[in-house]
Image (cartoon, rainbow, N blue to C red):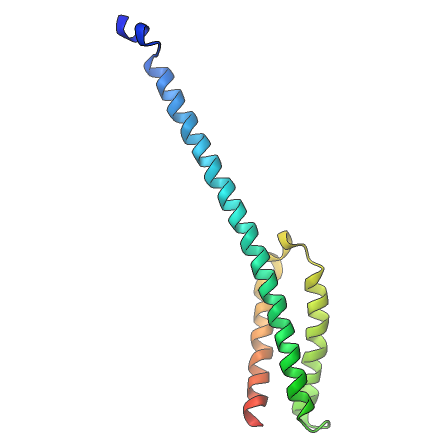
Length: 123
């Protein structure tokens, strides 16, 4: 007991310091995780918007090479119009809320890309 008093520490006190360090380390890790999640959301939003812009550009080129009255041209024109509206809507969404629409917008883009690829391969 005399040795503990001379060192100025008790076993309970060292346990508290260890727990405090673990809590601080955990807080640092949580902050880093939150930062990475925010960064991922920002990058995902940017990627989806760029994919929409790319789709619009390619679809416009393909539509201009198709007969105006053809079914494929009408369908792609509809997708192109919808893509413009979707781009405008997604641009207004806060990055922190973008995760709510990521999956659905990615699926719609995949469907449009498949339709565009089909028409493009038939040219």
